[in-house]
Length: 363
Image (cartoon, rainbow, N blue to C red; front, side, top):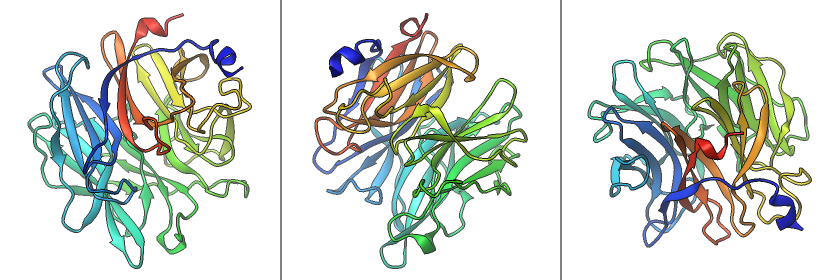
């Protein structure tokens, strides 16, 4: 039954990189991409070391480079090493800065009190195309706990940089405080950031985890579409007409039913793509289908994210799960990286990169 119902969706993409775990490396993933000036592709991701792959366990930011459009990759190198006072560094975004530098954004986690964690969001710059990075400046440093996903920092058409973040107040955290969406903006190319005056909360008490892991996408009109992971059975959304200074009331987006798992929306070529995990009883995920982060779906829009008219399967194996994507486009393809459970019950395990041709998603 499951096979019959999923065959209606074409499977796209082929593997070009798989970062397996191993001894002293229990977890790899949550990466981001950037095109270097020589045309090669830089990929930075979190590589955990030691024997613990927990979110707060020890990790560095590592990188690989592809000089042949993702077909092969260099050996791993350490891009940013965790500081001596940090618990780890993770959740990277990459952005080309106005002066030509590569900007690498990431979370640095710090111990706080008894079994609690705070973090700060850092920006380091590279003048040599990602071979080395300078000292960090702090985009967010409030002594609180913020969640910013990988591949989430966006430069708007105006040039403004926006960091969408979920604040989980430390004083509420016995595990994870209820998420509240905040937006940090820079008008000076990342030299300083300010938090806008709005803090978005869910209007529904049933959404007990709040608004988690926000992302933003700028629609053709310039309007900002913000989307959020929830435990309500679908993504939630809100809109801003003033570049994240204020937002419309938060509401469910029933076009994207999902478990408590993140979505990512990006432009690739002439398309806008949304990558997410659908949930039962939606037709894209007929029950039973295995782990709740299975399958891994690609929704395609040809009008700048206003309507998603076609769906494809990136992954459909019910014995595995997939999450936390990152995307970069090429001339006739795009790359997608994401966590792959690799036959285990740990959905934050290995990282896989697939290459999807634009011809695979053409009508």
